[in-house]
Length: 305
Image (tube, rainbow, N blue to C red; front, top):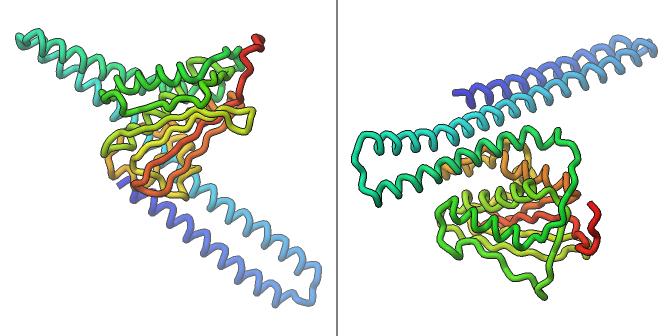
């Protein structure tokens, strides 16, 4: 119902805008006809017409944008509520079972593992929301010299455990020439960015997780991390929008993929704060996606931050 109401509000705003502009055009034509011999009045009328028309068009555009922004925020709140409620309900269910029944030790251990996984998911959601709120207001901090390959490998292990994936589901290709690639970064932020990239690739591979990661030097002065999946893919007109706050690609929700719409927004914000960038490419729907995180390459011989 809320979506239909918002669409109705957008349609109403556009319709009113068109009607008002049409009325102004008719009024302006009548004004020109009546004052065609009065140059001063004609010029004043044309100027006023231009100003009023511009105001109406801008007001309509801003109104439509605001309605869409509110829609994305509501979608985000619903997603966060679900992401918080589901693991809490699961943990509560297993705790009640352990409290009310005499559970065998093997099953008890299994329950503990499930509850730990649910608590990790809950913590990850909370941390993501908190980081999204603080990322823009954070003061500059000293950065540490980091080697990317070990950090990416650690993130792969975490992702495999978090999503209960078999070894080999996510692979990091060997770096050509066994070169050690370094960047200067805030460790926890860069780890968050890489984890979000991997988590996003896993979530949008509902038919099977096959993720390929590579690290390579780009344009001599940058290092590029690419994460390629074989999942649902992205339409070409959505490739830049997926990095906006709260944005989720229309139509992909039909696959019932969980998320808050903050993951790729955080990756882009972290990349920009480190002087880097992020891009997405996809052959099309159901053909997989490749996301590339590019960061300035650091010289390990320079020890100053």
